[in-house]
Length: 500
Image: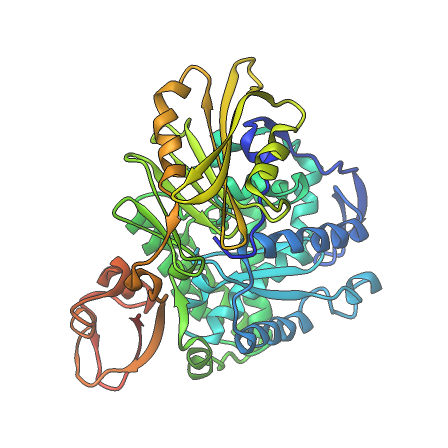
């Protein structure tokens, strides 16, 4: 959780079913890619507006990665590929030629890349850490440019009727497009629909083909892109489940290992020399990139959640899982029907005002409210109910504590029938909130990938330090470096090694 996160409750706490609709209207326009007439859900101006409006929400939820040089590097490469895309070709309509594209690096450890309509393309630091050269990044960025150019989101909007989605029941504890349930619930319906949107496999294959085309036209060795999809396949196999990102809706990574080199060879036969790999430049740009979660923004250890930057801690109930995101910390039981959301209320000046503002919302019936002291800190607490969509009743415990000039809020809820079972756990989280004094926890730093030249020829597994930080495994780092555990690494080769 970041220091500037705000307390946003209405979507998360009510457990209501949200109908996500963009109020699309069918329109027939010319495709920038094929030049043929296609049916779209939005006009191009609407797509641009949708992307612009959603961009600010994506930034608020993920956060931008704090490295201006890296951000400029990614943007420059994206703009280079854009020059040869269908958005800039002589045959393109002027509205497409005039559309500005924005390329951003998000501060998320999830291996993820996605695009919003109207020219907004995102890659995460997690994705960048798994790439080995500029050619691989070019294929990824080209793929996302292609989604925008082919107007895939608008095509799907014309075809799909997005139904009702049970926000918390369907998302909490899992990840959709790299967002946990709490994040999705805090997005507007417009942005949430975009994040839930599933492109068809034909869309993905078209974007793969165009990504290779754009990369080849800029002389990048597009076949290099296959190595990244090998990494995605290994991530999937290691996790034992579908890839936890937007990329899970793409064709099987194993298929793409085969098709991308074939597509690249076809463009080489067309006369496009592909001799740019850009390994040294790319590696220099990601030297020191943050890897995994940033513990400065909070981490759990032995049943305690610590936040070094804000200097507080609180307990996590036994059997509860914890998801830490920029705007909130969410804890939930194994059945995912008893939930606590912790966040900063940036709108109220006191604990009492925070709780009473919540209790004053429409649909909330207050049972009780009282002042409380939490380890010497001023606090306030209320118990309330709200009706669920299915006609049952949800019971809520909302608590706020004032600490170092900020108001921290805990919102806990479950069904009224189950509330007595979880009441002690809910109250125990709040009563355990206190200042963090442990200097070791206060001083913890994120893991970063440093470039290291090997000094010996040996298998990869023997090139790593004996002790790895933050629970990282050698297998995980083999995937990051796009090598096998037993692969012989020659002396003088550059590897990405984690340091903390």
